[in-house]
Image (cartoon, rainbow, N blue to C red; front, side):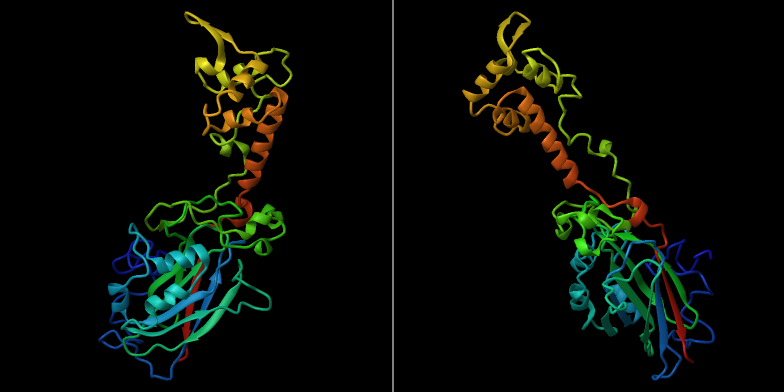
Length: 359
């Protein structure tokens, strides 16, 4: 389907994600009055089916509202390129629908606002490939439907059907949105899913930190199409964060008595007081390992905010220093255990919405 609709490119400008069936004018022939209102009677209802098109990226409870077109004009759920609102931010980050209900439940032009969950026995989320069906009752100018849900296995991802026109046979395909309120760290401890929510083939299912949901890292600050779950499993992705290990500097088995000084030179340090026992012109007589530690021990304030200096201060000798550096890196790698792209990545569109009306 081309996805072309009135005032739309592939994804429609009002966020509806129209599939392109028919002529998207308000005087839709057959089902709509000349004023663009619902032609069916007040007792007529429509069945809505939401399908998760991803593999393992689940959806939270669905926020659903039936409303007039003016609601979106006056209070849109989102606008591409703009900052998100706190309600959509809470839904994307924390799977919290309360903000969406408060934002729209009593807003003029909203006929029905509700939260739909109950995805089956012991199912917390709408999983990949699963469907959720529910009934709506449009009436008069209340001929639009909006749906929103967050992603448990992403930092601030969401789906939104915004102001979709209600008619028999309507079909919408929705892109995944990045609402821009949180950095896409993709770590076990920075997404809303808990440890028990992760499938057993994910490393996060064995990580106690998975119960955390740290939202403190700032995002892009505007709504955009989501880039998906990136493959961040390689150790190279931690370059700039991990510390230089002694074996990588060729110093782990060296017999040289100046290994501390050589290590810190390799790391880019050039402080003569730290590195040199004596300086003659441009020549530096490097400190021996014991002398290096003695200098740090007698200068408590030296490098007090420097990670490597503090590790050295707490080390008994150079070998102990090397072991401590490796331990820090292991903790860092464990801390940055990330969601696997092979399991949780998705491609747009990520959701399908179908409407069938009984008139």
